[in-house]
Picture 1: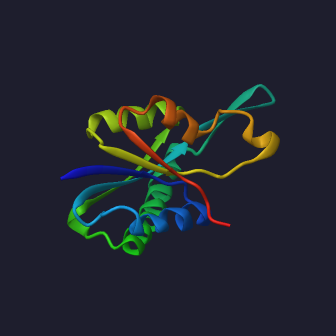
Picture 2: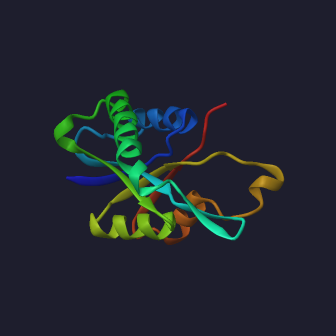
Picture 3: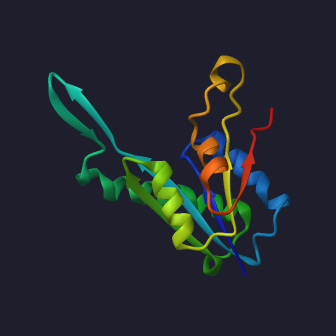
Length: 146
């Protein structure tokens, strides 16, 4: 059985792009990991560090994220026994997803790019670019439809 990891940001554009996956790949005969990563931000306000989100907020954020990922699961037509939904909190999302892909022995990771062009597209610092360069498995980067 194939082992696929779908990385999703929790926005409508990403979900709409990933919903197109059901016509390209057979997800019914695979183990599918629906993963979102919440990046922990540290800000300095008047020389006092401020961390967002706070640890106390993790359960409510995770619950909302899992609900959204379950909606994506149903849109893709994936049965409950073949899916694992996961919300992770980290300050280094690139390294976290790389370690996760290694730990689950992923065959394929799928991500939705934002489709930036022009000056915004010149800099290769995006999550998708990082996966293409360093993922320990095949990568499918899906572009948004116009």
